[in-house]
Length: 245
Ligand code: MG
Image (tube, rainbow, N blue to C red; front, side, top):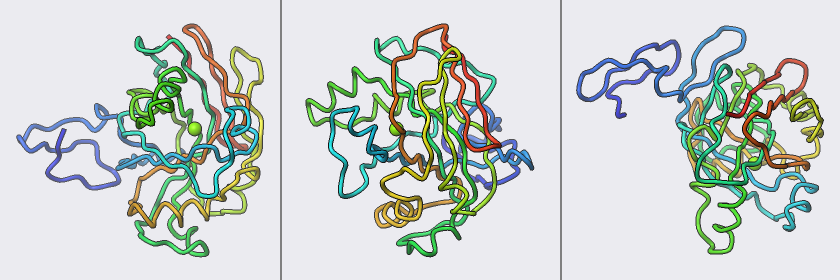
């Protein structure tokens, strides 16, 4: 869908190039402020891989000297109240619980010490991954577009507005499958800090209001199956529950 005018913020309807009004709801390409309920359009989602040493180790890979980046399209977003459709083109769907940073103020070549100025807030999300397709892609040196970016591959919470970097960088993050704890870590265990990530990413990609930076998953990733219930928690304010169908 192409829009001729989109204002970020309190919009419920957009106009397409053909002049037909459409509900922004239909696109799913937004996140919601948990307090104001404001909808924030998401232009792009930049993800960081292998940002926790123990996860890099469990994947049999080395920690990197620079962040590993990939994209998910905004159509990957899946909101609370929906269930996760098990994709028919995989037999190895994995959960990865992650902290996501939402950008508030646009910027390019952002200095580390100025990065908090550009933060709107944070969210909790699942970087769902087709591990079998990812293994094939890795073997061929092919991009991760399908294994990471398929529809519904980013179930999300609402957004907590804050740019208190110290607080965001020291939150407990946990995930349970059917009540069993599978992932448990603290965001202070990241290899590349939020400041470093914002500065590094903005060298290559202009960061825009509403962009989400997914900061990587800690160890404990594992397969999920239809019928499973996934619960996750970040800090004291965010908790999500999604069932897989
Ligand atoms: Mg991930």
